[in-house]
Length: 269
Image 1: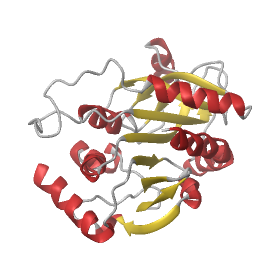
Image 2: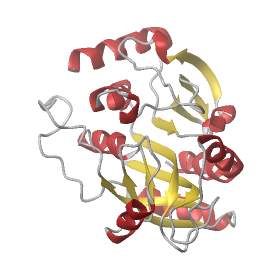
Image 3: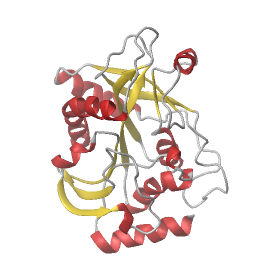
Image 4: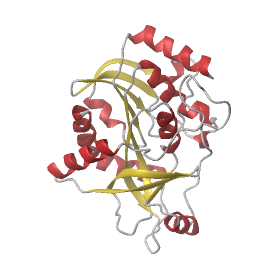
């Protein structure tokens, strides 16, 4: 696997001659942040050696290199998921590549379902922790060159970045929650009893991504920040049938608030 990571890295270094400081992973319906980037290079995943191809509607499938608020960034416009049939090594390979390209901080966004009764559709939640019910991406031989066999996960999300983001939200009168994200494999949305279980075990939102990327980033000692858009509710009495298109629409509506927070956060890093 390490050979594949290095091969992908060399390809991108030769193509771009770029050393990004911040990595960004954009979730469902949240690709619009790319419009704020002064793009220097845009490369389709299918052209990058060893990269999977995003198959989910709302994920464009491009790797963007450019400048955002004075910082050199690399942005994934569309991510990969375990439910697409990819191994977790493949799902998290881009994060490994980001590290070798020079990324020092990782910012992740996602669409998720709220199970906290205080949450409403369209709300934002900053992740303070997660519960990963997707198989751990570090299972298998350890890549000693990138990190230890037993990485510490007592601070998966950087407290300093969380504080900065909370202050940005407050200054711009954007209401944000702070909570725990439960990562599930998908691709089915949850049953009412599953939603109830996620709340019982301590979750505030549920989704199908983010935790594997963050685990791999923390394995390599990259500080992480993640934020969710609440696109549907798994709260008793409020559960309704929902489609992927409806989830995309909610994400797109909330995107300006999320984009503002991420832009200013990158400026502060």
